[in-house]
Amino acid sequence: MNILHHIEPASLLPVNADRSSLGRRAIALIAHDAQKTAMLELVQEYRDALHGEQLIATGTTGGLIAEQTGLAVQCLASGPLGGDLQIGAQIAASQVKLVIFLRDPLCAHPHEPDIQALIKVCDIRHVPLATNTATARLCLEALSRDAEVIGAVAVTR
Image (cartoon, rainbow, N blue to C red; front, side, top):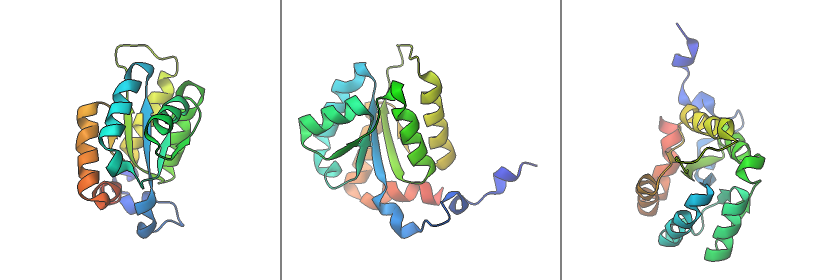
């Protein structure tokens, strides 16, 4: 029997984390080149819900969002240069509550292993991951109705 199946979700939190600090976890925004326009439209549509949230993004995506919307975005490295892995590390450290990753499924990506690692850490840490605008809208609707809903998902799963 694999012991990992018996780990309580709370034990996945860092030793010094408490549930009250989880409300300030970030929302990660990532978009492949062919999806950047869709990401900008999505962020504009949900600007009010995202305003006041801690936003992190891969380099180019974050720069475009900040420039086009005026929202404060912490920009990490570009995806192919390690930005996906930087976001994955923050997910593993329980610093991210939602990932919106608008992928281009019709294009090969040289950093595909990094993308798969990001998806895997979201699954392991029970962090909601939206990979298309329909799912992203569902997550952002939940966020706009009750900011605690999205933040609590990873803790209660």
